[in-house]
Amino acid sequence: MPKNELISRYEQAAAILPSRLRKAALSLPDEEKAIAEELRLRAGRPLTVLLPTGEAALGAEVEPEELETLCDIATEFSRYASSETIREGFLPVRGGFRVGLCGTAVMKAGVNTNLKNLSSAVIRIARERRGVASNLAPMLFQNGNFVNTLILSPPGGGKTTLLRDLVRCLSEGGPSCPPQRISLIDERGEVAVVCQGTPQMDVGPRTDVLDACPKALGIPIVLRAMNPQIIAVDEITVREDLTAISMAAGCGVGLLATIHASGVPELLQKPLYRQLLENQVFRLAVRILRDQGGRAYELEELPC
Image 1 (cartoon, rainbow, N blue to C red):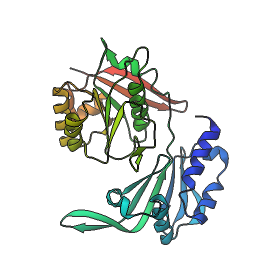
Image 2: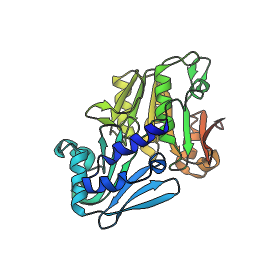
Image 3: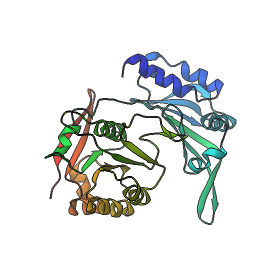
């Protein structure tokens, strides 16, 4: 993405802020706007920006009322319409941004029904990296068939970015990569960033998005309803995810998923993921390697 577009995305994210905080955010030098990853608000603390080197204060102290104003701006002054995601602690915002929220949970019968008295918020500065998966996508096919693949990296390593662009590439197809019907189960709303029914990120022309649905529920839904060739999901975290994924594999559907892990040795140390490997649901793994020069992708076969 060109530098001017990176700066523009930062400024679009800053536009979600209340006016006083917006001015502080826009005072950041262009060089830092281009690499900023998040804007963070904590009541009674300075507004900060997350850079690759860490958080930096922007001077303006956040008032509690400004967190409420942020929520109003992000929901286009219709909190009721966004109540389902607010209680889950996030808001998808037009343009592909995502606001994470913390506050006081309103519990009823053991279930969180709302968030009140907002205390913190984070605006993730969404930047598509179109083309990062272009060379990788054809390598995930053998004899014309998609091979079930895991994407591995530690937190913040770029799994969501790669997953999004792989879904786009597989959906569009190419000379060495036949186009695929994909069902994307976007449980956390971070991949497609659906706002009022429309994905704000490009996930391809043949991709159907099931937003804000747990994978264990969403996988059976898309199997029955959408006839996918590939099911793509975000992070596998609980045993129920594994059960649903194993069921989909038994139906002959291709699978693409992400996991928090630096590599196969770390997978083998965790009982849930060790079972995933023992079941031989996935055959390939993409490791995301990150250094000062950027990110690189390493493809390896998983142990049988």
